[in-house]
Amino acid sequence: MLKQNVNVENTFDGQSLRNALLHTIKDLADHDPNNLQAGVILGRVEREMNLRERGDVAEQQALLTFWYDLFRTGYLSWGYNIDNVESPFCHLTENGRKWLEHFSRDPANPDGYLAYLRKHAKLTAIAHSYLQEALQTYNSACMKSAAVMIGAAAESLALEMRDSMEMKMKALGRAVPNELKDWRIKRVLDALEREFAARKSQMPRKLLDMFESFWSAFTQQIRLARNDVGHPKNIDGVTPETVHASLLIFPELAKLCSDLRSWISKSYS
Image (cartoon, rainbow, N blue to C red):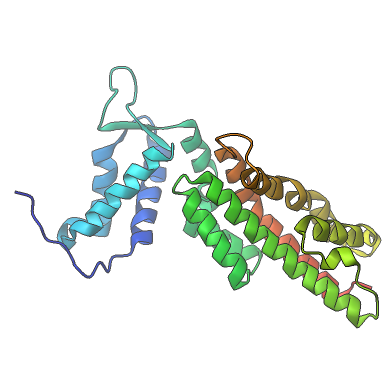
């Protein structure tokens, strides 16, 4: 009979549990990528988190769910070679290897991703809420939803910047272009781009370089990925690689927006 020792309060920290699993896989893969085994990985997490001693079945099942998600989302696959094709052997897929290359800030590692973002920019509660949901849906392999959420987070950044520009124009006694007040985000972005492009000579070199490097993420990468989902032409709608790219570039975009708002406030004329 299975031991039923469930902690009904469910007070365990699921994010810490997931982080322990991800860091264990990374550490083992860095040292011996050809010998990944389920028992070794899960056993190490169990010892680190004292799961057996804690005896919380819900907590142990949460770990197994996180473990299963890594296979479901395509980071791990069963087997090592033709002679060891089943559990307990497993291996990193191509996506898994790419994930480890940028593990500290990859969206598959939400804590690391958000920590990296916080070093670059501070998000409003609205943008942060959409970004958090983008990370949740991405890690649940719901790519269409993730594309919409990261697109909404980016749009929130653009609207904050529009508000800063409009306020500054009014303070300077200038007429605010109708396109800047438009409800359509494409027209707002185009209006902002025109204002910035007309004043490139006033921008500090570093800000100008960032603007020229990352502004297209608004008008192309993230916005178009969101639009592809909103106006689907096929079943897939958007690829995991496209959503991954949108999430990876978002921190740089957030920093650009933060720096542009600061420049608008202090130097735009």
